[in-house]
Image (tube, rainbow, N blue to C red; front, side):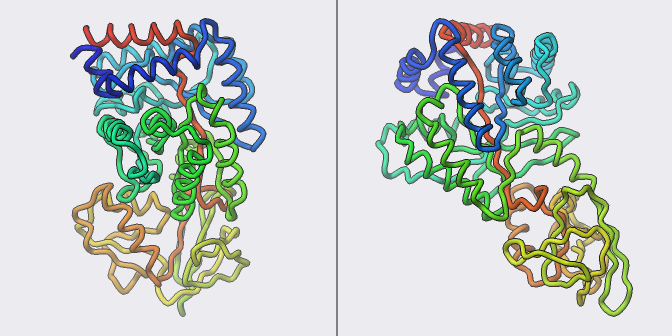
Length: 439
């Protein structure tokens, strides 16, 4: 496989030429221009109560440690973006171990804390999660969720072709079929990133009007808010010069919503998902449709109930739910507020229901629970969204931990990748790809 074939596959020759021209306008020989953009990006988000996560390749960190260290000390999160900017989907387990260890050493030498990873080109293979987990990474944000947020009929044939090429290269999951939520697998928390990102919008579709970009991202924000999911927005720092108002507009929209949108870094999302995974309920019958509930959780947990009553104060929340802040209460319900599942249920289905914060009981009688599910022998991620909707539309009593902390309805993370800071970095990046491909 030659470098030109790889680049043409990911971008197309015509788009690659346009990309090079754009790079020449966005980067300088020195890092001064990029430093200004990166600091501007961080200042904008900070002013609005958000902290960005930047994934940076180790070789770029090694060349520009002072700037990264300065922002890190101000609270900006940095994640590992590989050792060099190459397609990790195409390299072996041993090579990935070598690359990631070198990246870890570089971050440590430069005194930049990190817990997470995002792959260049958002591409990994089956080895990657195992390698990351074995090396102590907390999360990987390389999985892609695609939101159908653009009316492609309004754009040229070339733009549609480039957009289709990107989707073919990324091979994302579709938001209509999959939940945009973190998942814990083999100890690694996988946090999805949403597209259309700036790559799809600006470079592929050629959209540079800030109002149009705002409409696209606000659509995704509203979709994730209504369904209680995660919007990991992707915006490269070098594009902040003409996406500044767009980013501000999206964050301001998020800040106006109630219940709130949780603005978090990828690290905070991973830490919360791990914390939440330890929450449990203890439930015991007191007779006459009354159940004593003890919630074993942190103060930040959002406890929700529907179609039932409790003996403590509640607040109206969203979509028919009420929230309760008490951790020990009595619930009144005609049936136990639990989900029962059949004996042949797939472990994947049971794990999903528990990850959604429900009380799940195995091998129970259908009459002993509010909802009983006996058709879960075959189950995978593509079934999660349908099952979630089925449960939410039920009129059965529901008690659960919500996905996000502090009464938040959904979550928003602002992130960007740092592949180069200067023209020299960009040229070296091409050479690094070529050297890896011809090995």
